Each structure stands twice: as structure tokens, then as C-alpha cells.
Image (cartoon, rainbow, N blue to C red):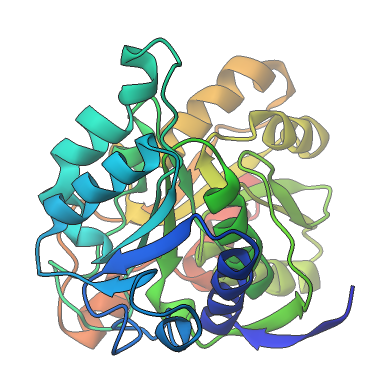
Amino acid sequence: MTTRELTYVKAFNEGLHQVMAADPDVFLIGEDVAGYGGVFHMFDGLLTEFGPKRVKDTPIAEQAIIGLGVGAAARGLRPVCDLMFMDFVGVAMDQIFNQAAKMKYMFGGGVSVPLTITTAGGGGMSAAAQHSQSLEAWLAHIPGLKVAMPASAYDAKGLIVGAIRDDNPTIVVMNKKMLGMKGPVPEELYAIPMGQANVVREGSDVTIVAIARMVVEATKAAATLEAEGISVEIIDPRTVQPLDTDTIVTSVKKTNRAVIVHEAVEFGGIGAEISSQIQEAAFDYLDAPVARVAAPFSPSPYSPILENAYMPDAARIAARVRAVVGRG
């Protein structure tokens, strides 16, 4: 494949362009996705290339957006429905968890719902409590939904393609603070299947399981710790539902220690589920309790100074790893 550098948002946009060109059943709807290209310009150029029948602006009506998508998917199309901010998922939650997630099961497998919901989550932009949340644990708890969280430009392209081609309702959560980050991305169309973790960095002393942008912070922490003689392995699950437990457990059995990092609040976060699965599958291999690094149980503050203190970062990750390996 021919590879070059693209930003995270441009990689996502290219994947959507390519999959729409390859499959006429794919269409896009959402607030400001057509004329404006989306609030984060994730959908730039799609209206020009594919026209108003396949790229359409909607009213501010999230429940209607997802309801239309569920119906279209059940009839054989592959809709992409954008919810702009992850915080707005709550407005459409009945359509998501009672219709999209359950329809295939309630009809005995006779109906598929190949619906893709795109949204932007995470903090770091002083967008305050109603526009900075990470709600992946809420969504991953619902049987029938898949939840993807790209942590690189490569994954942003591959996961949106993989989600659209999947025959199940899938939510792709882009991270707002990563939109301008660059990375190598192949020009060709490719898909990353749901449930396939990425070993970002190999190591021998401790495994860090990092979600979305926390992969970036974990990588910074690993570089600092390497200079101190601590070898860190980093696992990016890519999708929190389905979760690639095998890759995580294999790593922990090698390193004998685990630290889980996510941007969402710690209580009830996806880290608790990952920790439980590690304890159930690899307890005899652990030389220390599984540790977590996450946000405190509080809404995200607006103030940049407070928000920086609120969000996990490389320094907090490194400190927790030192404690786990007995050097804290």
C-alpha cells in the first residue's frame, strides 16, 4: 500500500469518501454534515462528490436522525448518522438501545441493522460539562451495539470503513483533541474489523491498556519510563465492544502487571470491566493489583487549568506505573 501522512480527521474523511464511492447503499445524514461539512469538518467534500440525495442536513432532532437510520438500515441500506457531540447520544438513546441494538434479536436474526453512528467525544477543548464527556462504558453495556474508538489516523480511516461494512449497529467515537494529529495512512481503501486490538508498543515489565487519546499519553509515559529502566507494553483495544480480551490477557501474562487508562470517569468506566476480565483470566500471573488511571467522578470543568488537572495525562500514567512496579 502507498502510505503518507494525514491528520486524524482527514483520514476519517478519506475513508468515508472511499467507502461511499465503493458502495452506493451508503449515505450520510446529520446536523450540518452537508453544506458545512460537520462542526469538526469530518464530512468536508462529501456533498460535492455524492450530492444531496446521499449527503443530507437534518433538523436538530437526534432521535429522528437515528430513527431514520434504523429504518433505512433494516431495509438494506447502510446509513451513517452523525450525532456531532457524544453528549447528544442521550437525546437519541431510546432509538439506539431499544431499536437499533435489539431489532436483530427480536426478529430472530431476520433483520440486520448495518447502521453507523458517528460522534465526537472527549475533553481538552474547554467545551465544558455538556460537550466533553466520554460515555463509551454506557454504550458498551448494551447488547447488540459495537463501539469503536480510533486512537490514530490509521485507525480513524480503517475503523470507519470497518464500521460501515459491519452488519451490526456500530458507534464510532472520534476524539476531538486528536483531530489535527498526523500519522501514516495508506491511500488505498482498507477496513479494520471490530474486536481486533493493536499492540502499539511491546514491553516486558507492565501492560498499559489505553483507550482512544490515552494511547498518545501512554506512549509519552512509556518513553519517560523507558529512560528509568521500566519496559512498557501498550495495548489499544480499538473497540471497547467487542473487546479483544485475548490480546490484553496475553500481554498481561507476559508482563505480570496491568494499568488501564481512559479519559472517562473512573467509577463504572470501561477500565473496571477490563480489570475484571484480567483478574478472571490471568489472576495467577499478576504480581500486583490491576491499577486504573481515569478522570475523577465529576463533570468536566470549563476552566482550562481545572480541565488539565481533571484529565489523565502522561505524568499521572507514569506515576501509577511506577507504583505498580514498586518504584513509586
